[in-house]
Image (cartoon, rainbow over all chains, first blue to last red; front, top):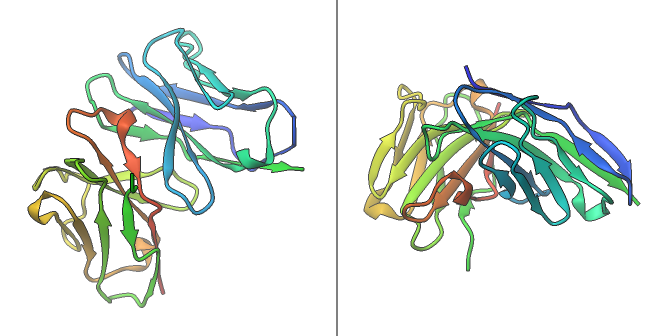
Length: 113
Length: 115
């Protein structure tokens, strides 16, 4: 079945470091791909998305590119801040569904000043 | 604009007791979702409502879980009786008419601990 695999956390970085959180997926057809973020004590928020191969989603300095050849959607940011500390979830939406999401397990990111 | 409101934020109960969670979606959002999120995992969909109608409850354990959405606004999710394995965070989300998944707005969740 369809699945999403994320790198295990926690990921601990110093402020201004470069961030990569790996995400790979298994899916039939042409899924859409998402990154959600969950800040402490808050609900999940959509961070960015990509709906087809080679699309790049971006928001708040974060980027991810839909790579069909490697079935990946890695999240990157050039210079992280303490305020980026959160749990990040990669997810896919099956091509035949407008709401059913398949989620990764989440990666906790800790940024130290 | 107010976000999705959930209460209580935390609940601790003994096993075999009943428990209920409440969700108030964003005004105007006709689609409402309940998810369960186990520790270290992503959310799992339990049930989806379009207005008052439960259009997908295939993942809801109906022997002990029930949900309702009277008048197509607020919703309640109930567990009776609770089991140890029900300890999790229960998330509510809503989306506007004709919205697709990327427009789901999540509440902060209710963390349930069953002792």
